[in-house]
Image (cartoon, rainbow, N blue to C red; front, top):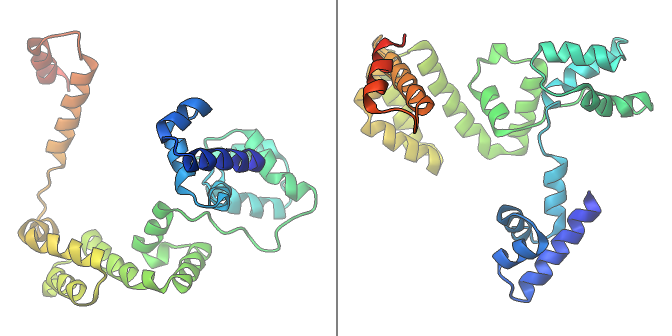
Length: 248
């Protein structure tokens, strides 16, 4: 895989230096335009190799569970696969076997593997209640903030905002204080968010202080869209109207 990536990277950049268009390169090498663009943007092949190594996999969320179960003495790949499938794993037993191969050869990690970092996972760590984080998640977030100090400020503001929304806190003008703090010392992206929230202040304040919701309306919109797509190209408006009125 690595040798093919290096060869492809060299081919594409040689063609670019000759002045060939990305469209022509994609056509001649039988690659998609997106693939050629990705190789063209990478000045060095190592950028592509690192991205491939760190690419998320189906088993990433279950590495810690598999590690602990192996250390407890459960080494049967089929049994472990059934366990993590009950936890939501969508892969097959072969992936689990490949993951456990280093364990069988004696290369057992000295410490439990850290979860694979993705934007969604880190966001979840930040906005979730601190007491609901596991020790591994809490340690991972702490180490991430230590490596990237610029993350600490937006993480703190995200926690405060999540707390307001989750607990519907409106006392002591909490929303106004949050917006003012962000506009004073927040990062540019946060200040942009705060300015937009200030313009929609009345709607946000109402969401935090009242029990009204547009959920029922949005649910009906989704239902109507589903019915329309089911009938697309096969019925007229009269039948669509009847289905909308009669379908629960």
